[in-house]
Image (tube, rainbow, N blue to C red; front, side):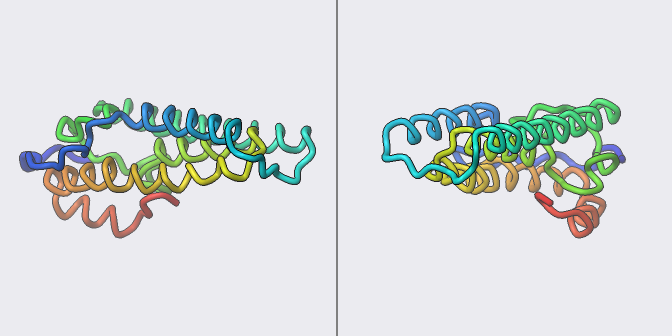
Length: 166
């Protein structure tokens, strides 16, 4: 962890950092549910017990990863607000951040995968990569630009060592 060095960037596109990631997840989850109800079903070849078990394990894993990310941010006394990366007061590279630069977004993707499995409809899975693409472009890219502006070479080194997702 280190303290802020330079001011954050001020120019972002009109959609960058505007929609909170939780809202994106909820929209994807709702779209997944609607798709599974409105389109012809392409059911997963899993028994109900196995489907529920796998979905539950995946959702719990996602929630644990998210909690680990929040705990690391709290320990570093920095913001967890994803729409204001310029408010970041320190670079967090400990805990879960040694393995992924975006544990909270990874957790959201896991929860969406769990939801798709629970819905037992193959078409629901289409929304998981859409979530990843949206979050990469409109959330993670601007966050990383802000962190690079704030922490310079220290962030560049961290980014080279730790993968974006896993």
